[in-house]
Length: 297
Image (cartoon, rainbow, N blue to C red):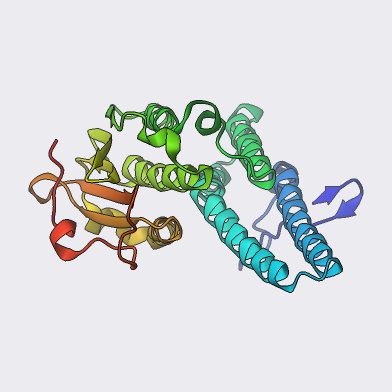
């Protein structure tokens, strides 16, 4: 794998059987390597840019002799590193997993036509675009322009539509103007939690319906993402990393998060509660009495 004449990686294929690969197999491997090279180059560039930014920021803090500022900066950089890691999991890793499965299916065919490689190339381009957004540390454009409710609705519509399944979707916003007063970092965290919950429902639960409700009750913002799919026990056993990211985002705001069965122990209800005035007790999880509380839909 070369970029501008420099080798950045190598694609290795091996077999315990001698002579199993033909020259056509070698050519297909070269095509796959050429498709993957720009993406690996972008990943390495992102890591180098992040390291350079950390070194430059710490150097600036040391130059002005602000020890307290340097400590706060280190904290902020660590939080940003965690945020980027969670974003890579929520977006890029999921896309790469689908891409790897598609390449694995293609490798089983004796012939791979250019037409069959077109979806792979398109998926790579989309992953590279998503990665560029993460590198630039840009907030989701719909969230920035139109607010939290519209951003969640846009993602809900796009996710269910692109799944190819007949999934009914609905978003109910009963918050009035409460969302307009949220800090930008809080809005981003809430959006990412809702995004992960919607993605998990669509990709893993085989639901017929996915619903999102935003409301204000007793001085608290409540966001509920519910589906009538396979339920949390079955759906979430393969995606612990995604749950951890959701809980971490909730703790950092701070908000409380619960993941429970929905109606009559069917489906899943993800519930996020954020205090708009007094702060909630620490811990990031709902108490048992609220954990068992269902949606009133």
